[in-house]
Length: 200
Image (cartoon, rainbow, N blue to C red; front, side, top):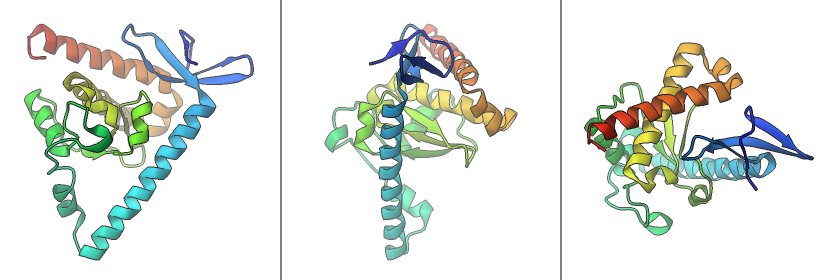
């Protein structure tokens, strides 16, 4: 059950706490049960850690350095398969780079990652920035549900990278709701300019 139009990153209703999940198409805040969100995030992070260990083991076994592995893996993928087959935008780093170039979004200092955990299809989030390695952006499967969504995710997360660099990770995270609103405002302005120019 989602709770809308509450103030701040968290809200308590009865004995349950809800956490800010996203904004809907009207700009209203959408909240989700904090315990459910915590468990989903925990499962996703656990799956991601397992996949990372598998990748590292493969690299060590075949003596492939990370840059070569990056090129062989999500750079080369020609189409989405399995649980992601219905996503119209190709889940590859190369595709993201081409999209960024087409719309004039600089990727200087940005490291791209794609989380292929299919459980994330059930979560409304489309991406996140890495607070421990500033410049790292991870795209979740739902970012690839349309060209506009992928572009929005890239631009939005880049704004967070800029915020981390300008204000510091701790300050941004301690004032998450405020910086989320700023990021959404910049994202919407960017997308509207493209639409008015007939480029999107």
